[in-house]
Structure formats: structure tokens, C-alpha cells
Length: 252
Image 1 (cartoon, rainbow, N blue to C red):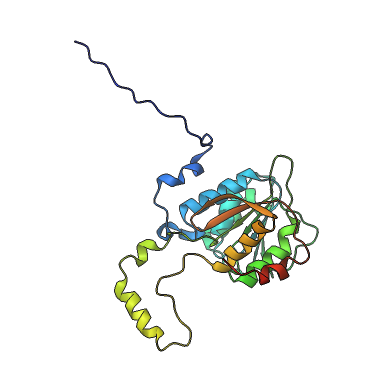
Image 2 (cartoon, rainbow, N blue to C red):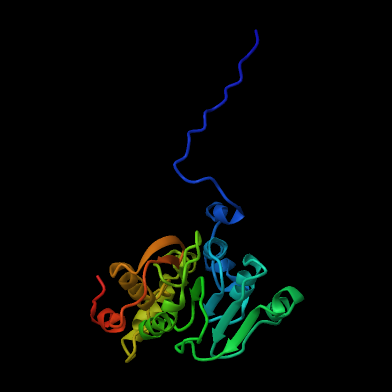
């Protein structure tokens, strides 16, 4: 008697069709152990890659450190897009600098050593990546300096990516078995003027506060996120009193 093969039915998903490898980061283990030169989790870098692909025009990066993220921006961007990267020092890893110095990148990647709180005159951007000064005042100043230079183009939205903006599990693996370490820190805190956290922070509250205020005021909406990376879509320019209003709002 012949047997019948059973074919399980695949239910139709409500999610959009997969577009590329970067959409599959969820099948990997992503945390601080796989950050490397880019200083991002694999899932965070995938969201950044996707955001670059979804935009057009010039790109601005605030804070590049070893320039791993600058390499990712250059690799994801079309050849006609220019990348401006601002940091307060030149500290690029040699391999990253060699990549950015290739013929395909040399003329369009600009590694600036400058104050990120000063706007770049006469330039407009389709994508902004903020990963510099993570204090509340630092992120607020960077947003105020560059937000209004962002513009969408046709079907391409204006997007802004913030690293270290969301609570996450990037360091959960490291702190899971560190009870004695936490106990030792707690004991030493009794004699410190400035307290040290028992568990390493996985995001920066100041970054999240600025992002929340952009959304609260109707200037942005969430686009994609993973790990500590949050990408928002720009909906409008900043009002003149944005800094003052944001400073007065207490985090919930």
C-alpha cells in the first residue's frame, strides 16, 4: 500500500516579503560579543544598512571612532552618494582607512575632524547617523545642528539613526554570572562620592530622551529598530524652541 507524504501548510505572513540578507539578522545571536570594528551588534548594523538603502542623497555621520560604521555606510550606499563623517579626532583603524581610501570611495568619503555641534553650510542630507557624544546635551546639540538639513527626495524618506538609544540585552550575557562582581561594586560604592552601576548600562537615557521628544512633538516617527539602534523618519523641521522645550520635559 502506497503511503502519502504529508506536506505541512505554511501560513501566509502579515510581514512584508524579505528584501535581503539584512532582514534576517533575527536568526543570529546578536550582542556585544560580535561588535568588532563597527562597535555595533550584528542586528544593529543590519538596521543601519537597511536605512542607508532606503534613503538617497548625501549622508552625515556623527562620531566614527575606528571608522567601522563609516565603512558600512560606504558599502551600503550607491556610488553617487557622498558621505561626510565628523569626529573630534582622527582615530581610524588602518584596515578601515585603507577601505575608505580605495578608488571607489576616496572621492566621496570625507573624514572631517571638527565640532559636530556646528552645522555644515550649504549641504543637505538624506540620511543622518548620530553616534557621537551620548550625553543628553551632546545629542540635543547634534540634532539641533543638523536636523533641518535633512530632506526627503521623492519616494525616499529622510531617516536618522541613533545608536545606544534603546534598552536592550547586548550585555546580558556578560552580567549573568557576575554576582560577586556586582557585590564588590556595591561594597565599594559605599565609599565612593560617584556611584558606579552594578550592571553595565546597555543604552544612554539622554539619547532616548531626545528621540522621545522628537516623536512627542510630531517631528519624527519610529521607522526600524534593533538592539540599541533606533531609526526614525523625519516628519518636520525643528521649531526654534526645540532645545528649551526638550530640556523641560521630564522622562516618564
